[in-house]
Image 1 (cartoon, rainbow, N blue to C red):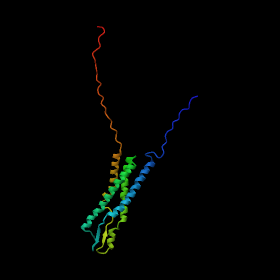
Image 2 (image 1 turned 135 degrees about the vertical axis):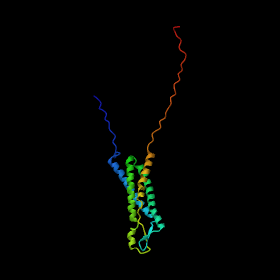
Image 3 (image 1 turned 120 degrees about the vertical axis):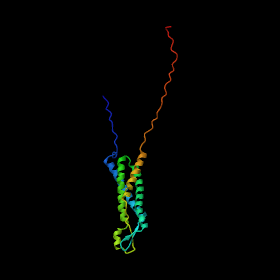
Image 4 (image 1 turned 30 degrees about the vertical axis):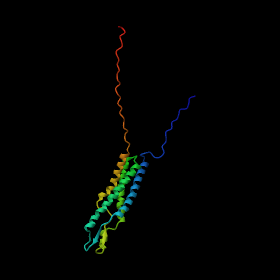
Amino acid sequence: MSAPAPTTTRPTRSGPLPGSPSEVLTDVLIVAVGFAVLGVVGAFVWHAVVHLPTYTRSGTGGLMDQVQLAEVMGIDGWFFTIGGVGGLLAGAVLMLARRTRPVLMVVLLAAGGALAAWLMVVVGLHLGPADPDVVLRTAAKGTRVPLQLHTKAHVVEYAWSLGAVLSGLVVLLLSSPRPAATESRVVPDKPTDEGPPPPDPGR
């Protein structure tokens, strides 16, 4: 009577496989929600720290002196600072948490930064004052009308994406496994100890 052949069982893995659509969708949702929250928070911080320059209603329209013109740069400067810091922090944290698909994460960080910048602009515009052109039409002479909370140089809006991608790449570089150093061992030549030749028995 022959013994039954042993059966081999393959280990089963619980949960979605790496790179599966569900895992990719999870990465997309995490990045989108994270940057959306940061974009809205950034808009409130932007609104709180920026000192908006003002027009002064004159007989012919709105005038802005040199001091107020200099403060216009502060709108973009604060946006760049907030976006850069927020992007750096978000990129580092998200890459540390979801670095199993690094190429996908770099793309998502760039897209998430664009989402945060857009939300920061939109929410900041709603938090700030109304359009000064509309207000100046009905304002009395001497009334000071502030500018809207909006970027003047749109290039500063890339700060979110640039900061996120930069910090993500740095984290990816520092956390990547390094190849183990191989030790080279030099084997010395075996000394040859040749004694005198054996005596010839025929002599």
